[in-house]
Image (cartoon, rainbow, N blue to C red; front, top):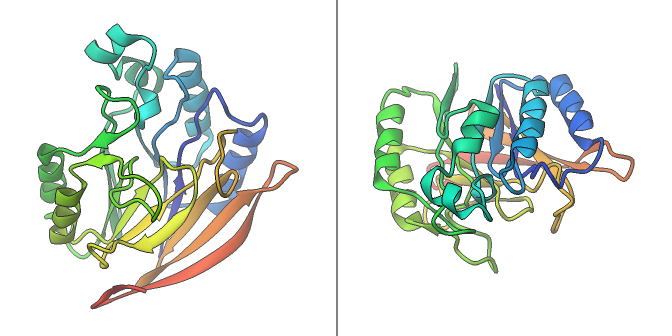
Length: 258
C-alpha cells in the first residue's frame, strides 16, 4: 500500500493561527509515503509568506512535492509578474516548479498550470505533456498520478479554468494516468472524469486558509490499494484539530473507477 497526503491551497498570509502546527503534527503521525501540496502556498507571493510556507513544508513528513498555484505569482508587482514571476518562489522555497516523486508502487508528477499572464485561470502546454509521457513511459507497473493546481474537469456548476484541458485529459488517458490531484476551488470533490472514467479526479479544499468555501479547512488521505484507493477526508474542528469525517472506497475496473 502507498499512503499519500494531499493538501492544497494553504494560502500563507491568510492561514488560521495555530492550524499549520496542528496539521503538520497530525501528518507526521499519519506517516505518509509522500506529501503533496497542489498549489497556492501563498496569498500574494510575498517573501514573508513564502518563508512561512517553507517552515510548514519543513515540518511535514518527507518527501514533499509542492507545485505553484496562481496565487504564487505576484499580483500587484506587475514588472516582477511579467519578467520573473517565480523569483520569490525559488528564493523562498528553493523548490522546482515541476518535480516528481517515485515510490515502489507509484510515480507522482507535478506540473505547473499557473499562468502569470492571467490572474486566475491556468494553462497546460504540450511540452509539459511530453515530459509526463517520457516519465511515465518508464513507470512500469507503478501507479501514474499527476498533481496540478487547476482541475482539468471542474465539478458541475464551476467554470472551466484550465486552457488546454481537453487535450491534456486525452493525453493523460493515453499515458495510463490513474489519478489527478488538484485544488484551486477550495472545496473537496472526488469523481472519475466524465471524459476519461479511468482517471479519478481528487480535488482538495484549502487546508489552512480562512478563505474557505464548502467544507472548511480540509485535506485528503489517500491509501492506494492493489486495485483501488481508500480516501479519507479530514476536516478541522472548531478547537483547531483535524479529524476524519468521511471515507470512500474506490475500485478501478475495465470500465473505470467506481
